[in-house]
Image (cartoon, rainbow, N blue to C red):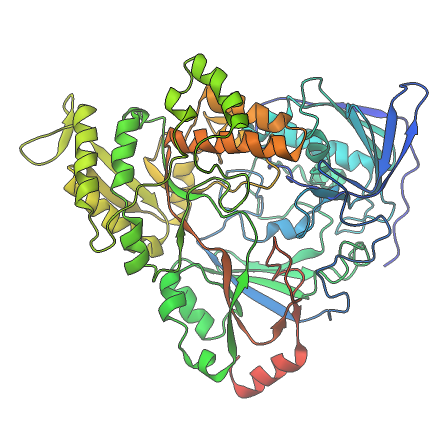
Length: 639
């Protein structure tokens, strides 16, 4: 297909940032860095960097003339299909709104101006651009877009599309996103057909601004104007993007199939060489974990990233594994451990008392759960930056104390934060589901908080029953939550598990006051910045898909400001250590578990680069299909 003719260059168009409170997506957190040239502009007397990327800390890993990423196989064959499972249901292809349940894999359809890699935690690289220009002050950035980018319908991408998409996010995007970005991006200007300029507000943190601008996902302006689609509404028609894949077909709540676009513009881009290797990526939907596993055993889908310790320990002895048709692997995972936890809804008055939260936390027996339910396969989550040097350890350092002392002096933190070791989750006796010592401690805390046990053994305060609902949509969590519920009932708490269907679960999470405790994963990165405010900022507490707990705390807000302002890696580590320490001390979570490996099973027709990069499994991207092995599996009847 021939490339369409591009529109001629036009006069600069200004797009003012609109701060209307709607919805949008969290921008990419990291970008790749590249070798840069500098020049001095006479009008500003500032050194201007012209580069293929940037890094806030150190040099970029990849040069401007890179041929491909270090961890891919540049000769990986293209072809075949990989199929994976998805849990729950879906009723929309719009993952930029909380209206409805979005289909899995929709991110395959879209691309951003800058891209990151799986082996450089601090670098960001030009992807939709050839170069980026910015002054020492980082008051603005200009992206010089590539001239060969087309959307899935073959129409060219221009700076107009970038500006339109930014304004779309700011008028119809997620409120917690808008609340953050509206403070930082002051203006967006179309300078030319392929030149777009972002100007930043005076108060915007300079370490974050390039990533905020470069993380912009780009949609087709013409498509949105023609269709009248909205970013804040559910849709069964995907938005027009420029990604490697398009939707081939779908059967609502059963499967979605993505096909590699044969006319995709980016196939030869150095960041894409050796990637996007499958002709098709298929998601098969299941509402029940057992049914999903049986379907995998029967070959109804072919790659499984196992997240059930029970299945991993006991389920992989079926004929496909024994014959070698199915391969099981434990692959290294160097990413920050996921901060998965039960979280309290702090909007509920009963959970505003830290003694109540601590009592509830004491009743979760991780050690017994790990031994009895998880076969010892997990470690306990202790930190929001688990297994990274950003994790708080022991007593605070001198640098942390310098940040914490003013907050103590102002009465925002207890003085114990200056001397105590970083809070760890309570430990329990692994021999029995209920730890009696923790039961006594929890009982004393509730007594102290005024929740008194009545003649019926239940706790009340001012005539109100102490009731705790665990909201869940996952049947596989029943065996984990039920012993926790029983422990709380022994404490006199009217605790119960309410498992609902996925659509109702999403609906209730969207109503900030309509749950007590849910499981939440608060994923953080190696270079924490302004995106943290979507998770922990007071400005996002009222209504957020990330700050589900409704956290509002001035000390945390100010520590996040210190993290965002950190100019060196040492400062970043120190300030994040302090923030992690205080987040853990606030006790709005009951830490769950994590593992430092990928536990995967797949039919033996896929191959991957060895070694894998530290920060990605990459099974949908830089793995590839071995057609000869696939034919052997089909001939044997394994598939």
